[in-house]
Structures are given as structure tokens and as C-alpha cells.
Length: 309
Length: 309
Image (cartoon, rainbow over all chains, first blue to last red; front, side, top):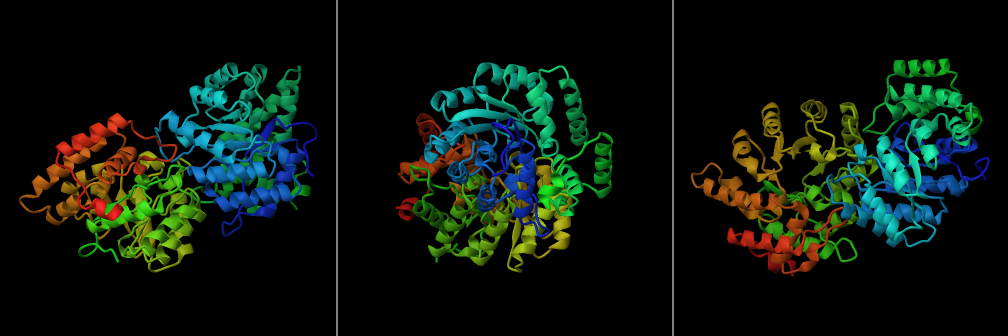
């Protein structure tokens, strides 16, 4: 088994999903990259926003998860995204995650209808929990209102925690709104809060954040893990500055194709460049500039080649 | 076969989808209601926004379409929604619609990512068309930016029409923005434009609109069909006033559960009230008031009982 160096990972990666030239999922490259991430002490929040998960079919998501577990990755480090706009799909994906022994499931709210009543979102989560019907389910809510259009409010968290205290155990807060993250941390002691950017760790860890689930964890999982382990030490500032420099450079471009361009370069494998519609790739010149700028920051992906080839 | 009285329908219904008490799709009620709609000279834009289509799984959508055609509905009056945030699902649904002989397919853009480049949306549609690979495909674009987050721009229509003039044949414009509808009508002669409300017919039909695809066509398909056939006659104003009164009353509530409440009443069948999360039903008192208000307007659903029982 490919396992993290020690204990439960605290940085989870919304793993980018490779595609073949004809836009099929590329299972072999996916498993190889996931093994590298785990070797860097990361957990795998596969099928997240940065994974193009909602561009994948139900069958593709089920099969890719099987490939990871069957490929030897310890399912306890897996926190697959299992939400869907279609309740039956969310149930099927969450049930599958539990059956395969995943440490958690990160569940988007249904994201087609906008302005829905909170009670409808509550019923979506409660239907999933009741239909999966397993004490092993560890469900993480996914708050990304700027994309989903459906917020996970404080009152919704309170209601779900009240009814399912042993199942609804955490949240990924991708709002980028520190005030919201702070309130969740303060109002729900013991609830596992993962900001969606390592930029918030400096403020969130002292308040008890569980870790982070971050796009750029695809690139620098080990450095983020180091920072989480050492944030209270005097030299943590140096680590944080390294994280920030890479993250800020990435944020100045289009995240998903840019992540793929960086991995394509460091894996020496152009197949990684492919994205599925509706996304578009970045221009080769933009990718070259990005890679050069990251190199100037001392960025590298140690050991990647030996896992993906 | 259940067929429209004559010719190609010009009013299409985004048919509401009935569910059983445990939230499964209720195929029998669905087919019965669809047969009533067709008897009223309506076409069936099943699996639209008002159908809770994105709350259905791929398998459910495939099976419900089969049930309609196998149940004797002329597939030429069917324009199922076949879009999805996942390209493989959109391909599978569109291919299935063509195989079953549907008159058209109404294709939402992928609706998870926001702010995507137009080229990515173009590639989504071109991938569907190329992968389905059938001259029989009649594809209608679906412009509903306030929900999908992804507009169908005039330049995207132009590009798709240029490349696939015999396939990309029309659009449903649910923006509610008359200026947009007018521009599409004027810039693309021969393109079949369906506003999403009968309220726009008075202005759109003189400019050559094909008809409409409207939520309230679930309730008053025959009256809308009458209006489309007679809009240029002196007494059309009277018909339009009837349509407007019902529509305005419906728009003052929450559309999908309200449509279901009205059908539940007129079919004398409370099973119609069920909605799938994330939607919520309307309060019984609100439903009662709605039904009474519509009755005061002289609203009825002639012959519904004989089709749904």
C-alpha cells in the first residue's frame, strides 16, 4: 500500500484528472500521480472542483475510485468528492466511497438550482446519509458558493451536526471569506474545518483548523504538509513565504489548465495538458512563462518522475 | 400513437416530473401526463429546468424517454433536454434521443464552472455533435444564464451555425431578456427561436419565432397553442389575456412546486406534490389559495383526468 508517512493527512489534494487525446479519463496517469501525492504525505480529495469532477460521468467516478484502491492506495487517505446535482448520483457515489473504505466523502450541494431554500439542501444531505445508512460514513460539507450557487450556511451546519453528529464531521470552506471560516471554527468545536487555500492556514491553524484542501496542493503537497506540522515554530514563516510565492503565481493564471501545464512540464508528459470542455487550455507561451517563473522561485516536484513513468 | 392534432407542435412543455414517496421517478404518472399534454397539441421538452432534470440520474433520463416512446408517444414531438455538466452524459443522452427518433434535443451548456471561455462551450457542443455523428440530430441550444451561469452568446450561435448549419437549428431563450430574443431572431433568419414564456409571443411571433417552451405550458398547453395559431387575428388579444392571467398568478409563487400543486389538484392525485431535493414543496395553504385563484380566472385542465387515471 502507498501510505502517508505517518498518521492522518492534513493536506488534501483536489487531484487534477488527466484525459487522453480523445477526452477519455486516463486511469494510469491518474493513479501514478495520486501515488506521488500520497508519497508527499497528502490525502486525496479526488473529484473536486479542480479535478473537473462534474465533467465526469458517474461511471467514470466510480471506476477511477476503484482504480485507486485496487492500485494499492490506502483508502483511509481518500476523501472523494461525491456530490452531484442529481441526488441518486450523490447517493451512489457516497455509498461507493464508504464501501471502498474511504476516510471521508466531500459532498457538494446540488448546484443547478439557485436560490433554493435551506431546507431543500438539508433534505439533500439527510437523504444521502439515510440512504447510505452506514456508521462508517464521514461526511464533509463543501462550501463553494461562488461556483455551486448554494451556500452551506452556519444554520445548515448546526442542523446537520445536531441530527448527525457522528457523520457530518467537517467542511471544506472554499468561499475565501475568512470571516466565514473563523465563524465555523469558533461555533463548531471539534468540527474539522479545511480552508481551500494554504493562505488561510496561518490564521486558521491557531483556531484549530484540521488542515487545508487546496488547488496548489497538486504542486506543493509536501511543503504544505511541512507547514501544517510546523506552523507554530519560529522558522515557519520561511515555509509560508515559499508556499505563498507559488500560490500567488498560480492564482495569476487560470488554475486548472495551469496546474496541468505545470505537471506536464515536471512529469515531462504533454498528455497532462488536456482539459475537458467547457474548460480550455492555456496558451503554450503562457505555460512556458509560468514554468519559468516557478523555476525562478525554486519550485520543484521531487520524485514525481519515478511515480508517473 | 398519441400525436398532436396536426403538424409540428409550436408549444413545447418542460414537463414536470412526478416522484414516488421515496423520491424515485414515477414513470406511470409521467407517461399519462405527457399523453394529456400531447392531446392538447403540445410538444414535449421533457427534462428541462422545470422537470428537475438535473436532479435525475443519467439512467433515469434514459429510461423515462424509453417509457414515453415505448408507451406510444410519437417521438417527433419530443425535444428532450440532453445537456449535462458532464460531457459523456450529454453525449449519451443526445445519442439516445436521436436513436429513439426524437424531433430534437434541447442542450444545456455545462453548468458547473462559471466564467468559462466561449471556446470551451463551443467545444462542448461540437464534441456532442461529432460524437453523436448523426444527420438526424436536430440540436436546440438552451440559453438560461441566470441558472446555468453560462450564456449562449450571439457569437457562439454564429460559430455553431456556421459549422453545423443542418444540426444546430434553434434555441430556447430563457433569459427573459427581450432584447436578446429580438437580436437572435433578427440575426439568424430560419433559426428556430423559442422564448421561454408565452408573454413574449406577442412580440416574438411577428418576428418569426417558432413558438415557445414555457413552464406554464404544463397547465395551459391548448390555450398557448391556440394563441400561436391565431396571434394575428383580431380576437387574439382575448386569448393572450387569459394566458397572461394564469401565468402572472403562477409567477407570484415558486414555479416548480406550484405547477405540481396545480396538477395534483386537477388530477385529483396528491402524489404529484413530491419534489426532489434541493427543491421544497409549497405550503398546503399556499397551494389551496393558488388553486382557488386560478379557478376564479376560469382556469381548467380539460380531459386531464381521463389520461392520468
